[in-house]
Image 1: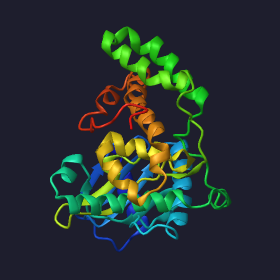
Image 2: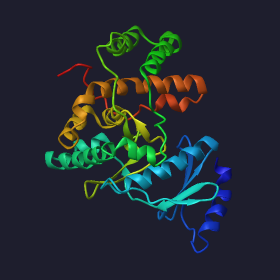
Image 3: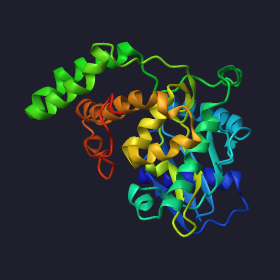
Length: 296
């Protein structure tokens, strides 16, 4: 994708002719967007295909709505023909579990309050208001039938590669769904749906979250999916700290544990099917702090 950088720079110059382009950083890690950061001052996101362009237009609607409901700093999008978007650079690094655990109890609670309050405010937006804004369902939304299909796919495609204990772990994970002990019912809310550590911008000196970015898969869905991303990235112990700031966590906790357990299975399947080996290492650096379904 590096050969596309000059074209991107020309498109940037056409929108910002007065911008003196000095330092340029090109990020190709995203699955749906290429990102160009200019002078650590401006961020430009270019969708990779037509589906990504549609997702970007949905994201514009999500952020426009969120801005009136959440206290967390968000990107301020400028939409350009193409389409692509630009916004002011938000300083910060990915929030890692080690960053949290190195702080004292008070600082950990303040970080939990920031992230918990953001999710509470986002999830509290009335679903009718979300629909009126023309926001589509989240790309991460799954039905019970989808989860059962995932289980069958894992058995067929991944079990031949697994050691016996890994197959047993998968069977235990899905047992609560198969015997209906775990209800997957929920009232849809506006979810982020991709709240990985790299989308939470952390200021290590101030010990605070500077902003949340990348709402490309946001839409109406199960709030447990957002909690699962917190579990997988930052640990269930941190999610428990967030409970005092988000009353919906407790009732969705078992669903979140289940969702979190399926993430690496989904990535492994994607790696096999796409022949993109990067999917096999998505779990590197993630937390391993999660309790079993049904634990008190």
